[in-house]
Length: 100
Image (cartoon, rainbow, N blue to C red; front, side, top):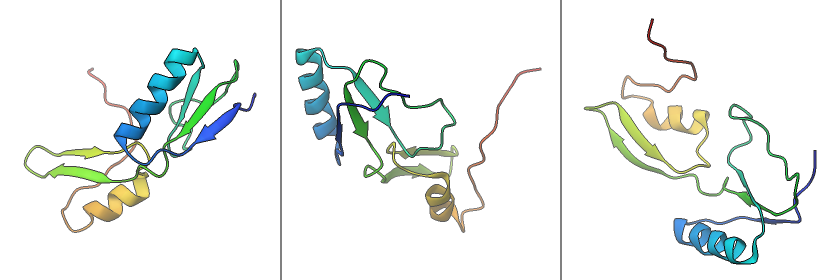
């Protein structure tokens, strides 16, 4: 496990875009970090770089009960999402969907 060279806490998409453009221009690796669940793999800055801690981007931006879809920012936790969904009859469960 290697720590990043720096950590940033953007709070809006525009800030992420500006920081990503700066990293790209300077050829600095970007290491995204969402909520720390580890479901998608670990965060490791093997070549240094800047960690984009996205935990402060935690808005639920859209909910459509008709088609069972929700748009969230990367810092939204399952617990927060399920609290938001409480009373709708829906909930978010982590699992795999397969065709058999």
